[in-house]
Length: 103
Image (cartoon, rainbow, N blue to C red; front, side, top):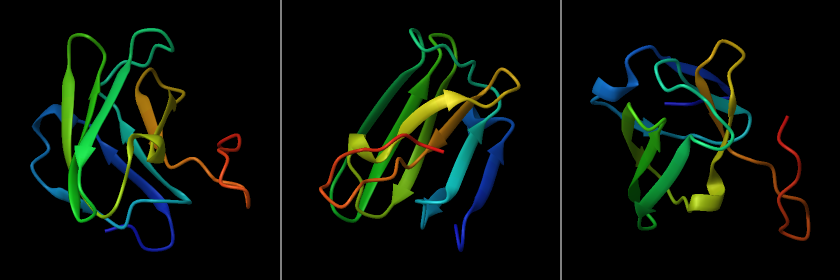
């Protein structure tokens, strides 16, 4: 559970069997084993207002993460974690409801 932020680092995200609760600003999920590429890393999400499944793939490895909470595909942003993996963040939204640049 995310409480007040932090980073959940998953070294073997393709085998992660837990559920993620409370994800949002200022938290991060570091998928160490999913290589990041701005043109090749894919993101998918399906769910309802209570639970869902976040899927991140580099074309070879696929992380399928159970999420508890009310999310949509726009709830997630992918970036390089600085070490070759993929960082998942919850992009901030401005007062008008538009996505702003993640930090």
